Length: 400
Ligand SMILES: Cc1ncc(COP(=O)(O)O)c(C=O)c1O
Image (cartoon, rainbow, N blue to C red):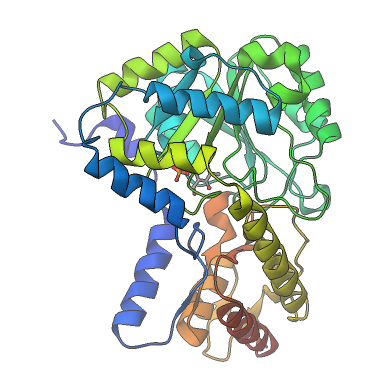
């Protein structure tokens, strides 16, 4: 009998890990590496949040808490949904876990039976398909075109729904493209859901606060109150408050589903870290100026990166409305050879040669289900971004 399960055998190792370990090896050899592959803000957690965590330790908040979150944190989350999204939830409709990631995982584990399908618009966050597989379900990826802003169209959604469809994984703004759906676009998708009452919406709003210009963030439960009862809205403090390491995410939805998620969590990790929960209360209820400052910072960096990348021969970079990623096409580079002698026949070959020859680490599009593209995280200093974009441009200019 094999040691590892058949379920595990269906799960792919993360292609991003290969790039990260190659970057780490090169750095260990003393090479000058610019990492643009991380999915986290490059600055520190706000001081008031860190102070709240220290106070929580001193006050002895170091024991188990309720499995899916402290009542006072759930109240703060209810207030957040009311304030930011116009959504009313009771504390019994809230779950708190170890990152938004655990919320997504628990929801899928609590609801999927073998053969259940989950629609995943591509490009997608790398974890979605494998989480579905771990839950015993079948990921159904739906490619979204660069011409459509990498967004799922109502027609493509309609065409991908079957009697076995359980969920749509909806992520706006998106990792890896930064694409964000307008209110009209969310409404158009919701109109499709109305025709298919067996399908549930899993809205991953983790990049909610990172939208630029006058773009208005909206989430399905907010624009379609009639779909509130079959929507799970997932969010967290990781990206908005630069708290990726604290591991607090939350979800809001029907009490039955929240109860199912609690059951999974009670038999796996139990409560998320008590100290982090106190920090999250401060993040959600304390001063919110940090959010606007970050938004302005990331918008400036987006503009810098998009304009520099569009000067690179062979690259074409759309302007995303949110998150801290761009997802340029490298179609104009395919079929060429790099100065170092690498054949650029895929986006993976592009990313590998770029790393080896220039030291810029990024993630290739195949990891996110749409090629030929690269994902660049601009959660890095202006100097690092300028330097990286210059190296990318000169790598592209050197292709023959
Ligand atoms: C789209 C998306 N969803 C969820 C997460 C998980 O965030 P966390 O578990 O840190 O809250 C991430 C993190 O990279 C993400 O990019």
